[in-house]
Image 1 (cartoon, one colour):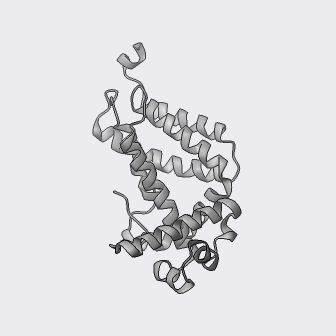
Image 2 (cartoon, helix red, strand yellow):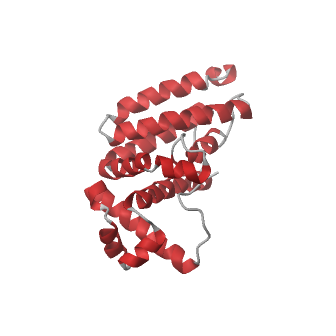
Length: 207
């Protein structure tokens, strides 16, 4: 399940405009952080009028959260196209976490802006679907990564529970890296959590 900030069906033209606004917000935030993402600046970068921009979003925070959800959806789509490698769920999710945290560390202004907007928009998001709390899009890609190959003897119920816990932990990890914590240190903590939540089966240990 991948909830959006605003759930609606858009015409192709409106969808294209929305995508340009999101791409412009991502570019501006990457270069200048949260303060660079004003609606006027985004509209100019997307080559649309300011009134048109306001037809799609009501504030910079909403736009940045839309951008965050879009990046999460892209992560899910990328995983579906190219299954992550690894020996069992723990190995797979640890590798994916490492890659994402490394990318976040390379774009600190972007992710700082995205998560600042996410925290600021918590009440609004909760009013929409009542299920906010596990992080952007509730990290659907975490569950998909855990199930992308051999399950290592873990049941679906095990993986559902672990996905919920890991989505909470990963939200904290992303905020930590965005605010300057060393990605290697954060990755080590996540790896420890993953290994404790998903211990290797006897067969996997033997391999």
